[in-house]
Length: 524
Image (cartoon, rainbow, N blue to C red; front, side, top):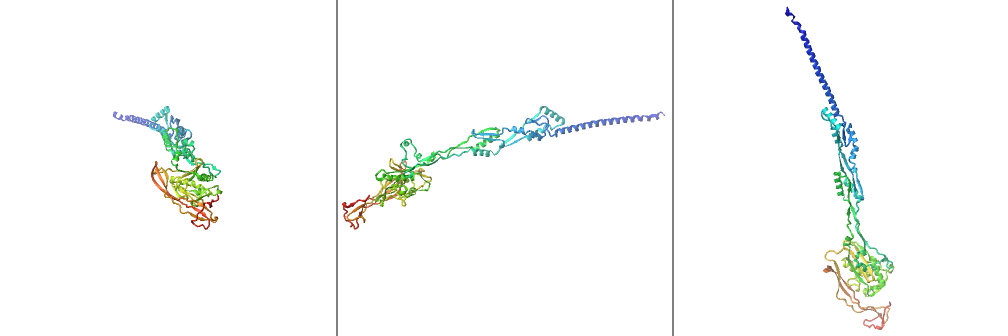
């Protein structure tokens, strides 16, 4: 019977099981709560970490180029840094000067760029990595100690060559070459031509060593110019910009020298030849003849011949008539048998003087005719006659540069002069001497008797006395340092002979003596 009471222990076990279950449940609840708490806290921390990472603003304590960008977005910070950027490049310019002229190569002439965007990106990335604790620690340190960033820039000069070229267009001054011109003379009121009387070098000028060219030409010396060395200045601007050595750049203008100076002009403008003839003897110095020669020299003086130009005496002198101011003076007539006063008598001495200068200058004779009779003021074969409307003396400039002809009269020394300036001789000679060789003379033929209706038997007159004829060969002798190197024949010139010629009465029988007591003298 006692064994039947054992089943009463079951409720205690059940209670124990319930207790365990409750404890287990409580444990589960506690653990779950802890886990939930931890999850919530972790989520909240992650959210906070993400808010730090993704805030899009700069952390407190961050400065860029001295500007506090705390709490700013990148775009706000970029705008706030504009003044800092400009301050950073405030000295980016050049003052380019030579002490007189100044040019400013300012920021508008540079391509300027800043690293602002990259610096802000770097600053924005600060304190954006790690766990919350790490981030918070880093943010605390940034806030306490700050983080500063500096900006930098690049400044590349642009169109330097164009800028420098514009400077050069304002600064460059070309050199002015030396020039010269024929010296202007006053007009002679008597001859109505240039006053070419006594214009040689005076004794004082000779003693001083004056250059005769300074009497014939007006020389104007060249003027120096200046130029900017564009290549060097452009290179210097680039070099200084690369080194960021801004400020003043000094330059100097280079001197540009004239290509042509008075000295170089004179090297190619020499007295190539000169000739003179005297009118000191006989009837050559008659006042009217001197007047005509003076007028002719004044009309020819200063003639300029370009290469290939022809010098014509008749063209320069014009017709010789009294109405044009030419005076009556002896001229050769009748083939040299006689002379008579004609307007312009004496001008042949001027053309003859020019002829001799032309030969000694080795210029080309285009046309020349000798007088019919030999003259005393020049060697045989070296004269050149002219006559209005018929006979001319012409010659040409056969060189490659202009030539200048000066004819003048030395009344003190009674000489006619011709000077020719041009290129110096080139080649194997430096001077030309003229040589005149007389050949066998031509003897007068038999006397001639010319009936003249104004005469009656037994009266007669001398028309002209007998004159020998002459023949001359003339030569140009080329010399170098005084030594003959060659000679060339100029011409063979023949001067007419003239027999005795008499005017006799009509019906005169040749052989009839002309009695001296019946000789008549022509009226003056």
